[in-house]
Image (cartoon, rainbow, N blue to C red):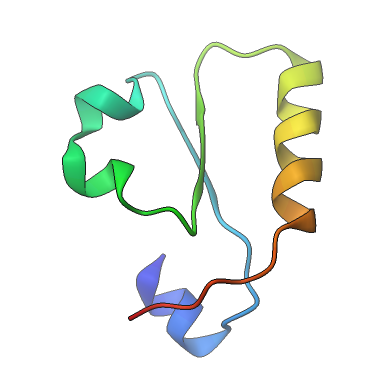
Length: 62
């Protein structure tokens, strides 16, 4: 995702996983510019997460 965002800074990224963000590790939790959605999720949760993430302003990478 970092490589893609360097090339296209306005790209929105949402990760989804069967693991919780806590289990994925501290480094992952610090990636505030990316969205995260833990599985399983309902269609309404997916839609609201995508809508909210699309409205966010890009924060850029350091």
